[in-house]
Amino acid sequence: MFEGPSGFGRIMNLFMCTIMCAVLSIVIPLIIECTTEATGTLTPIGFLQSFILSFCVAYPFGDLIPAVSWGGMLAAKIHAKGILAYLIQCAVVALILITCIAFIVSIINNILVAGIEGTLGFFLMIWPGAVLFGFLAILITLGPCMKLATKIAHFDPTMLQHEESGAAYAN
Image (tube, rainbow, N blue to C red; front, side):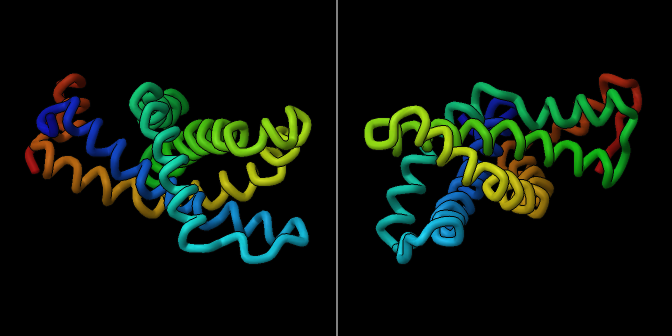
């Protein structure tokens, strides 16, 4: 279940969803407090509720949308290397997955009370901050998560990429 390429993907999805959802569960209440007159929106029970809901939304998106791969492909397509390639990969992951999570959670939390206009307004209010802080969290954690997932899954996707190009290397 956690071995090989599919195990690597599953582990990465678990790690990144946990991190992104924890960040969003803190950042979104703080954005609400900064942009409205609401106070006390960040509470332990609120964090738990937000985390569980966002994780239940994030995990299927993370499983179905290969955002990390898309980010790597975009970086390769524009011939970005090193830190620039990593920044592009993180930006793509943040833009795609944070947007999906924030949008769906906004609908679930607001549609019955605020209607579509209020829901879209809420989403547009939280989206820039959510993407920014999600990007920073991904930037800090994607590399370490990939290394840990590589060890747990006994699979290194960088070896596969190098073998396909005919330049396999040993760690």
